[in-house]
Length: 173
Length: 177
Image 1 (cartoon, one colour):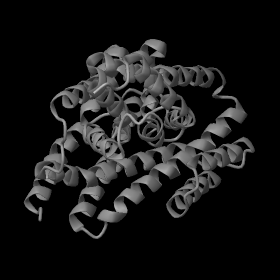
Image 2 (cartoon, rainbow over the protein chains, first blue to last red):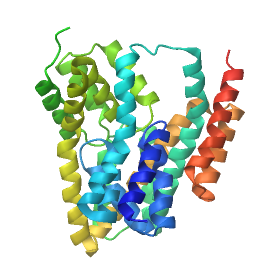
Image 3 (cartoon, each protein chain N blue to C red):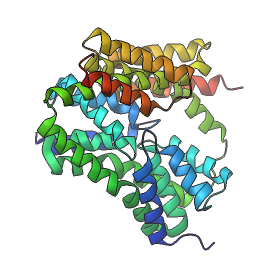
Image 4 (cartoon, chains in turn brown, purple):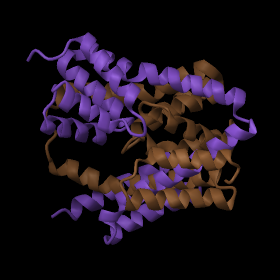
């Protein structure tokens, strides 16, 4: 299948199942672009994620970069549109009809039921990113130290990105 | 309700998109609640919760909801395009840069280092979200099964969700206080 059509079809579905934000569908995007279609390597996937993290704007623009890597500017446009159109249409409709969602019991049940699954997906994303980046002990140490600092201090993660980038530049990692 | 014009929505969200390093949320809140006062803190929390509850890119959902509430479809488009236009171009420029220079020894080292840190940030985010749920066996079970199915066995997401999501919601519905 044409990569553009394939991206469009897959990302439209993912937009609708991305409970808790696009982070929760990154493992699936990784599976499709790395394992199924071999459009990029593990390391390239993590590289592009790193790029999207140092750019301003919504984190979801990582998907734009994935589209770019697969099929250039048309790929970037198609990936972005496919990722945004379904969920934005839902947001639009909800904003029209649903003034206050409040704390309806069914909604709390849905949130509580999906939360652990979303967390499992976020941890999967972390694991897959680490697998792409940590091909040396120092790189693995950067991952561990960053996680520890973020969990135990209020340091801005951008400083840790800068530190990681610097160590990478110096060929330590 | 007077509220912002379509043009004001576009530029306000454009400013938010251009500043949103790391996470866009804090900047969106600052713009909507502190700077423009288009929303009260309570209204923002309400919109935030709906944006999180809906699937897809959350902060983009919020832009669409805010734009719709003030100016209907045109407001939604203005907020959406405002938020994404500049970051979209920047990300494409970075992509072009990566295609051309990504294999150079210095650049690939920098990206690898940032990638390693980004992986750590992601793991920390998962752990922090997991903490409050941890003693509950049901939550731990769902997290573990999801992780093994997706990260280790690399099963496709949609079938996994079709099994786990209804089960998770059903169990939390029957166990609700």
